[in-house]
Image: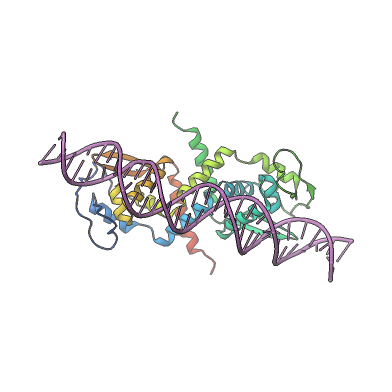
Length: 142
Length: 142
DNA sequence: TGAATATATGAACATATGTTCATATACTCA
DNA sequence: TGAGTATATGAACATATGTTCATATATTCA
């Protein structure tokens, strides 16, 4: 936190400084100091794009199910398809996407290709997300 | 892990048991025992959907930037818009989505509405994702 | 009350995305 | 080598999604 907004900062109502960022519309800033401080602390564009792409890849039910399956055992494409009731093509397409972000790893063995989670990478996120969700669904306000 | 696939399990090549899951196509299972074990361990549909939706919401560059900004300070809508060079409308729409999943919380103060991260919820995922991505971009294979 | 301002929201539109279908590639075995 | 099988991939299509534009709602202040 930059400006520990207690007693939430008197709305200064100063026009947006025509520095670099915004001429988007006639938007005013409530607290120019706070905005400036936050701007300086923002994550770089590269990290934003990469992070968003990572989450986007994780944000599909089919891919979640595939990762869930692979978190329990190494499986070949046809096993995944059978297990989840999906077509071989659909599974293969999705595995390609997961592989592209290094979330899974493949190992060929004869005609078959076995997939596992690539534990070196963001896989932990999946596990943690699952924990969060399972908690959240319990602690939902009634 | 269910079947610690060392010496990766002789491909049994048994036809898919016509139990409940799959008649999707003529797909065969490589290891019926392993598949059955994994099937029993799969996460429920509800959790899958919720997890995927959570990640999906996190999987957009604009929303990542908004969360990044809010991770540094409490901000009103116009501040976020100014800060990120976005239209007020776009920000408001996105904040609605984030609010829908309880990732941010809003607090009205006069005409303005201030937003903060809802730390009780999956926000930790965002932070951790960021860490992962920043590591990953360093440790990329050259 | 009425003008001004901050935020919210519905409709429309362009783009992105997941699945299917058809087919290509890679590997095994006779 | 050729048939058979497991996986990969390109094209097409239906659906989902983010932004903009216009406008509604909510609050303050004269």
